[in-house]
Image (cartoon, rainbow, N blue to C red; front, side, top):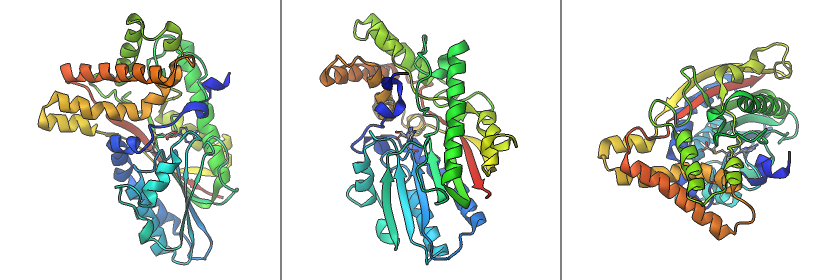
Length: 369
Ligand SMILES: C[S@@+](CC[C@H](N)C(=O)[O-])C[C@H]1O[C@@H](n2cnc3c(N)ncnc32)[C@H](O)[C@@H]1O
C-alpha cells in the first residue's frame, strides 16, 4: 500500500472555521447525546484527590461542534472534583486545522467558549492518530470521539464502481469491512491502554443501523450514490479521468451494531481481555437540519445553498485526493467547484428527498481495570 492511500497523509475537514459553521448537524449529534456522557461521569464518580483529570476529544476537527458540550462536561468535572487540575486534549490528524481549534477555544472567533469559566484548566492538542497510543498509559480519564471512527487508517483496495464502501459489493466490500474491523479493534485496544482504571469512552460512531440506514441514506435520495453519479459524470464531461475516478474512495468503513459490539462482548477478544466493557449502546437517527428547514421554508435555492457546504466540509479532501498530483491547485479547485456546483443545481432543480440524516451507534465504554 503506497502512502497516497494512507488516510493521515491527506485527510482533513475543510479548515478556516468552514467545518463547524457548515456542519451544524454534527453539533446536534453531540449536544443531543451529552446526557450519556454526564451519566457515565456520575457512574465514574471521580475522586477529588488532586491528581490531573484528562479529557480528550479525538477526531475533533476544528473543535467547534463539540465546544458547548465539552464546556459543560469540564464545568461538571470542576464542580465534582475541585482539587483536580483538568487537562483538555484535542486530537486529530496532522493535516487538521489545529489553529482554528485554538482560536475557537481561546475566544478568538464568534464562537462561545468555556475557557474563562473554568479554573485550573489546561488546553493541549495532539496530531497522533486514534489508531495509535495517544496518552501515557493509564492517564486518560474520559475519551470522547464523535463522528470520526468510521475513518479507516488506509484504503484496503480500489472500489471499482463507487466512491464509498456502502455502494461496493463482493470482495471489495469485504476488504473495507475487514479494514473497519481491524481499525476498530486497534482504536479500542489503544484506548484500553490510554485509559485510567474506571475511565470512560463516549464514542458516537457513524454506522449502519438495525434497519440498514446510514448517513444520507434513510429513505430519500441516497447521498453517496449521488456523489458517485456526479463524480462519474465528470468523466463523460472530459473533466476527470477514469483513473482519477477509480482513485476516489472515501477511506471509511461503516460498521453495524454487531460489528461495533463484538470485540467488547466476546470474552476471548483482546479488547475484552484489556478490560473494556460496554455500559450503553443505542442507535439514533438525527435529522438533517437543512432538509428540516426546507420543509418549513420551501425555497429550493436556499436549501441547496445551505445544504451543499455541509457535504463539502467533510468530503472535499477525499475528492481532492482522487485527482492527479499533476494538476495544479487552481485546476483542482475548479474541478471541485464544478462538482459541488453540479450537486447544488441538482438539489435546486429537484429538492425532494435530498438530505443528510445522521445515523450513529452511540457507545459508552468503561475501563474495568
Ligand atoms: C467528520 S469529522 C468529525 C469532527 C467532530 N468530532 C464532529 O463530531 O463534528 C471527523 C474527524 O476525524 C478525524 N480523523 C479521521 N481519522 C482520524 C484518526 N485516525 N485519528 C484522529 N482523527 C481522525 C478527521 O480528520 C476529522 O477531523
